[in-house]
Length: 566
Figure 1 (cartoon, rainbow, N blue to C red):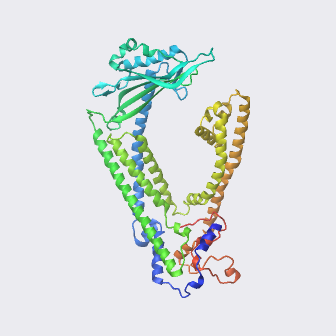
Figure 2 (figure 1 turned 45 degrees about the vertical axis):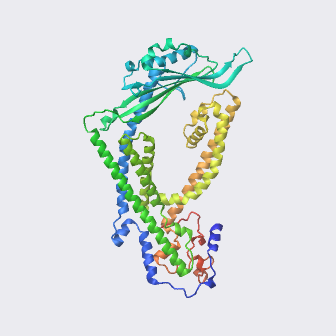
Figure 3 (figure 1 turned 90 degrees about the vertical axis):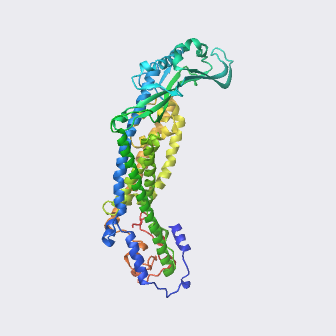
């Protein structure tokens, strides 16, 4: 309130400098009042008043159904792509990793502990690669470039020089790494052991890792069932034997990058190509509707700015005052900005979808982010029209009233939360998988605040270190007690308090702003209103400085949750 008072005092002008004979043109004032009333009307009220069709409302309703349908169609196709990649990853692990059980051990696929197992796993990869055509049940083959098979490449990374024996304290290690690579052609892989026997002699005390890379071709035939053209993929497979820790445990990891491309020389009978054209036409129509929506909302913002300029000029010319910032914000409709942002994201997502549909682009993730976010914003924007009904806008009003307090409260609580996060990571990280990284600690603590996964978090601490075990108990009990019984309860109380305030205003009426008094034509409320300590209750005339006639900041609300209601 101190900042608001200072702001209002800065806008004050000397009353003596204002002409006492200042008059206003009744016709100009009434025209401005009618235009302002019309701007703040609901679509139905605008239609009843001037028979203006609610074009923006009709476009928004049409856009909701179209974008939702577009998202569903893309989501179904994206699920096929993701499942195809995941199943191929599982198939490659079963094909090329000896002893793979079908479940990853941790952040790696499998581990080996003896030299013979390392040799066997290395030889197994090469043998399976050479017999791929006879082993795989899927449409997978060797990748080609310029009518030649791409080779399998094996690279050994090791210390340049090293000698270390556990029984001898002196050791000699050169930390510089050297990499030696070998290329194997699929056609000559049958003789790889005899021709390159020296390459497979491993010095385990120097060995850091072994990396095997090769490329395979595959085709996704699932899309044919959904009447779309199939996708051809190139899988760049990488298998890593990780010995960087030199702990006696070699971790084997298999992963790949899948790159989609247009299938060459394809011939498909049916309606696949025809349906693809229908999808492209539908996406183009979505882009047109979003452009219309963005243009209409931009036009409304421009009209609002012009109305604000007219209202500001009217107040300045007739009352020699400036419009308060709170009243200025009433003209800036945030819903229009939200709709424009959602339209832009929907247009970008539709263009990416069309490129994917035409097999010119392969990045499904970026497209799904744009389409998903735009759909979220479109559905959230529907709340704007529900806000015109008194019984449906409680959520919006409560959020607007509670937001400042909630943000301030979260800033304070966030400091405590970050302290617990850093403390848990540094102390408990080596002893519990849920505290191994900062992000995992934050996620674990958030789940504890919501009462999820409490007992397993306690139970998974092993008593290997008594001091750390005791610290973990004090750490978890203090965090849970503080955040569940105090922080979370206060957080809910802030929102409940705002809801009760809004509920009371809906019964007794919301406080009117100077702008609303002008719209209703209350001469006694506009502009001579708002002085403290004077009024009819004291038998005195209400007088204010002309510079603060419209300043909402001068009003002292009974509760700081008072908000402006258009």
